Length: 101
Image (cartoon, rainbow, N blue to C red; front, side):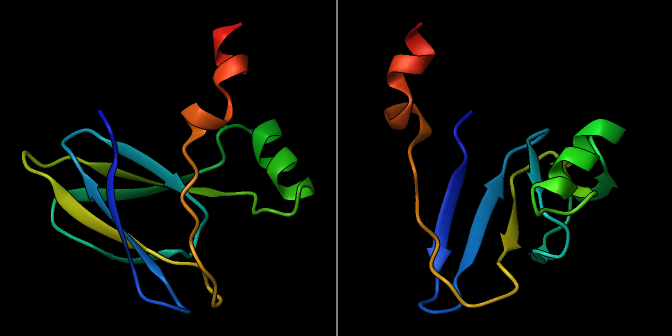
């Protein structure tokens, strides 16, 4: 299932995501602005070593998970804690050769 999203704002942009039932999104802690009914938030490390690797790379030890547990789609809003632009990168287009091998 393809993720539906909308980018709003100019200098302090917000990424509005539409989560379908049972869809999961992982994000850095502290980026959530709002979430509608049906979305559950949890925090984990993804494993001790994974958390340590993220920390050594400049990220946080913990990771936030958002899952749509309701029967209909709900919106989740996320944004960076500082001003900036959100760039959309189509991963399939960037790594087609790698994915084919």
